[in-house]
Each structure stands twice: as structure tokens, then as C-alpha cells.
Image (tube, rainbow, N blue to C red):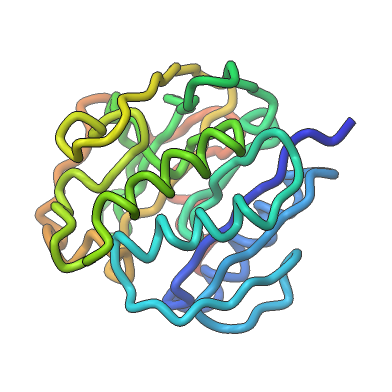
Amino acid sequence: MIDLTVLYYTANVLKEPFATNAREILWRSKGDYPLISISHQPMTYGENIVVDYPRGVPSIYRQILLGAKAATTDFVAMAEDDTLYSPEHFNFRPKPDEFAYDMARWSIFSWTTPPTYSLKYRISNSTMIAPRKLLIEALEERFARYPDESKIPLPYFGELGKYEGALGVTVRKTVQYTATTPCVVFSHPDALGYGFQGNRKRMGELRAYEIPFWGTADHMIKNIYN
């Protein structure tokens, strides 16, 4: 039984061929799971929902909320446009009252020489799998708490299950799991967070030139950008 929908959200700012290559990898990795794309421009990619939001953190969560409401499965998996997913990542299922985060999440900084993977042990929205109803409930409560988006405390408007206390909303549980095959996220000048740190962003403490499934960082950079 198909019990999970992939929610792919994008502001459509990634350059080609990176954007198309990343989408093709996601499409293969998701297998038979349905995919809903929530985008700032029309796309032919799964079931498409087009939004007219200003680019920013609140928009990301509004896109996720729209996708979750459009889905009909018990669970939803987040898919960011600059993250590469393995098939194994989509196998985990959390309990009905918790958000799950895959901690096997390596990063590549596009400006690093030589190309290197790095790992920081922190939860990320890009690898969250959630019960659909719990996700809708949590996001609706957030936006009801801050109807005026200009008053949203943006540093705390992040991963579900992490900042509820600071936001003044219901505290919800999280669970962390580690897939054997990791996901890979790219840090690049088109990323939303690049405007805050640029290429001063620090790599994780654990580093590698090669990781399982994906191969060497040099090979990965050449393939995804060409």
C-alpha cells in the first residue's frame, strides 16, 4: 500500500542543468511514491501547485502546508530542490505523534577546493518524514500564532519539533534515524541561506572525499553541474 507522498518545494531559482539533474535523481529514488511539487513557477513534475509568495522562510512552510493538504497519504516526505535523495531514505515511518529526521545528510559546498563532503549532526527540514495530519496541525498552529508575517521570529521559524517553545506553540516530539545510504545537500550561491553567510559557511567536522552510493565529491560536482 502506498502510504507516503513526496512534497517537492522550490522557488525555481536554481540554474540549469543542476535543477533538472537533481529532479531526475529524486524521481528515480522515490520509486512508486506520488510526488506533489509546490513551486513559484509552473512545472511539469508530479502534481503541481503554483504559489505567489515572496521568497523566504515563511514561504517554504506555506508551500509545505499546501502540499500536505493536497496529499492523501498518511505520511509525507520533504524534498528540497538542492538535495539528492537515495531510495532508502523514504523507507522510514515515524509514530503518529512525532516528526522524523534522517541524520545521514552529507553536504557539499560548491566553492570548496578540492570538492569535499562534510557532515554536521543536526536535524534539517530537507530530510524530514512526517505524519501528514500532524504536520498540517503544527503548521496551521504556527501561522495562526503569527498572522502578521512581519512579526514572525525568523531565527526560530525552523524545523518542526525544535523551536516550538520559542515560538509559543505546542511542543511536539522528534525522532532521529540514520539511513545506511545518505542524502546529499548542496550549498551554493542560489541557496536561500547563502545571503546570510555566503562562502563563509563552515564545513562539518566529519569530512570525506567519497561516501557510499554517491561516490567521490569531485565526481558528484562534475555530474550534477553538467
